Image (tube, rainbow, N blue to C red):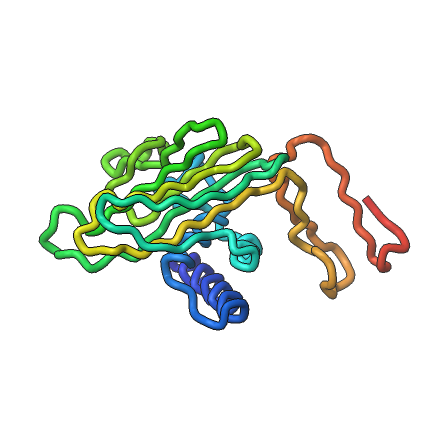
Length: 238
């Protein structure tokens, strides 16, 4: 439940803050931490966000790499204005993800809507197609997420499986920003299609006996061979 998830996510956020401070000699914005955490999480349950697993299982390693590789943008947007950001998706990409987050100003407890400054996200593909973010229906929480315009959340995410190689354009619109400019962060991820060993991944000291090898397939669903060496590469076992 949330009692276990909260300290785990807080610990990962602390590690990301440390990585950012070591790299840039300043503290990151909260919106950037949110965008990276959501964007690098491993999806669970139904495709896209859902009310059981949220954005998925946190992946601290991918999150740290997103900071070190600077796979994000930060800017501000005013009412009815637009900001664009571009990045490239290489060949052999299993999944492309883009997440927009912002820290909204405080709202009135009497307001019908909790959100005050409303931003919107869309992604333009190399062929000119427009992809909208995942959108859940709070009135029907069991229904899977569909693509559409989200006017109630301060975090919006787009995923594309097996994306085309080429340049993509992130579009952030200040749909309704009565108190601007509104600062935001948008993170992107292009996950290569390859087997990724997560434990052990080199340099660990492991007790003798039975140990578990863990990995992510990242779109590889065919039979694969994993080899390991316990003597610095002199001999290998499958």
